[in-house]
Length: 98
Image 1 (tube, helix red, strand yellow):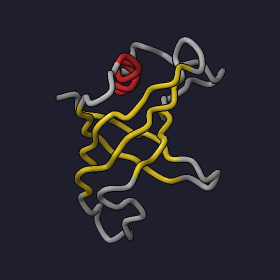
Image 2 (cartoon, one colour):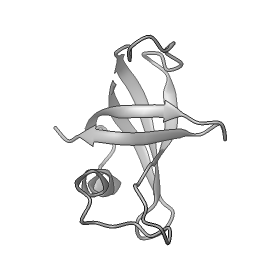
Image 3 (cartoon, helix red, strand yellow):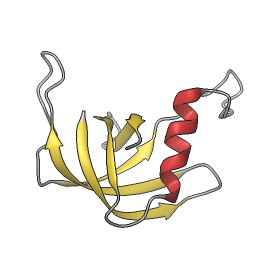
Image 4 (tube, one colour):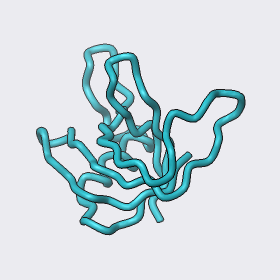
């Protein structure tokens, strides 16, 4: 779980975007080591839940929360969960929109 400030938003397509975040608060998640650190800047992509055909359903509540982040402006606050995947990218798993 992180608290962050938006540094930038880059639209990739109608649903996908890259959100540049300056991490302000990083809370530990269970027994896993924290790879994120307060003060770090990361680029995170939405981790939408997809259906069997790879489509993104906006009927999924988590998908709607992630989709809404694409309209954030520089300086806006974001609270959510991020994860670093094997492809070397950070992903927003979920968010609590303040």
